[in-house]
Image (tube, rainbow, N blue to C red; front, side, top):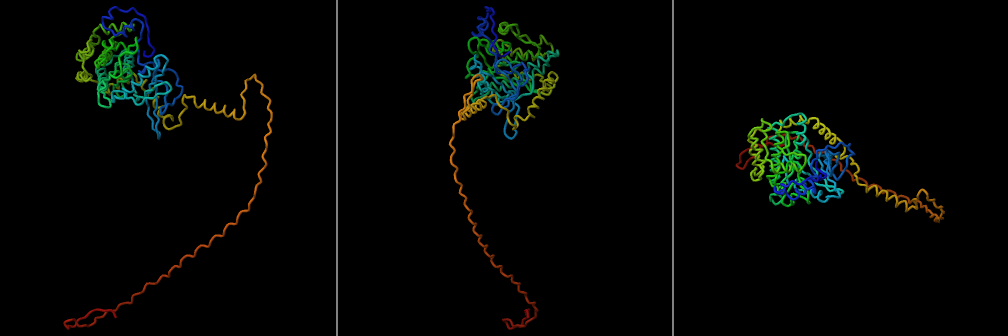
Length: 478
């Protein structure tokens, strides 16, 4: 469980230094350190407390926690915009504590900065980052669905195995998201070389449409972000899914591919590849034991899929796939379940939980908050203090005195106040209103003249001589 560090004092196995385990990992095994879990990861412990009411921070309305643990929690949220615009989001919030507050907040800022550079359908998108009262909030798109961890738990409760084509298709989706992270660039086009470093069933979510997405880049590594470890005794990640070189303090793209191979092995077999009662036991197995083929536990696993898993889980990083694209090329040759089949399988395992979440989202969308309605008060108590201060100042200005219960009220001595003489009122008669000027006479309208009637024309022939002396006739009126 991510959150508070777990400290123990085991006996250090003599073989650990020979295996090249990183100094911080060795300190952990001595009991001087602890595994540093990601404070911003989606946490599997579902909140059972009743919601205390929505909280408004900026343009976001924050509701009850979906999951919580340690210093981090993930909440339902609504983005409130103009003209009734609203959107359901997921909000991670991490509160600063006295111990390691600066590092925890910096990790969350780095997560949002790196995740914002990755734009891909198989990666949960980061929308916004807010700092509020010693607390940082990462606003992400809300993805209705279930994590692979919850799906594996539901399948185990029903004694069902994950079909091979579904397991392979889910890992294919995660690999596509990782390829986008590994090849992401900055503003200048330079590759950031982002390495997730915490791929696990908890950090792969399958949405209701059957698409797998990678989430939580809280401990992702880029060259400008520093080392794989924090202060002495802290190792970042989950030991069951950490590659051998990651335990030795190194990480690369092949580290994420190892984790994908581990998740695929777990889905195919229904068991953890590396498990133990203590983290020390798990680390020993990761570094010293070779992974068996999944078909040794589940004979129905195709040999081609066995080969992909075993290549991803090679002890030496240079013996694994060189990129997510290479591993995708081999998996694409195998039968893969379509998204509709994955969605139907997930509904059979977690249909009730999915419907409960969908109902809650519908309630948030239909509520007045976040759709232009008046917003509830925030946690800030400054308006209350301002109101109290204003009352005290007003009371002092008017001569009020606050007394303790045992203190006797002083005698009130009346102070005569001189009354000014009344000012004489002069009544003036109203001036007569001037007579209105007569309106000018309208201009004379000219008389309309009757049109002249034409006399009727009676035509006759008139005789005349032309230029040649010949007699001609023409018509003319009489």
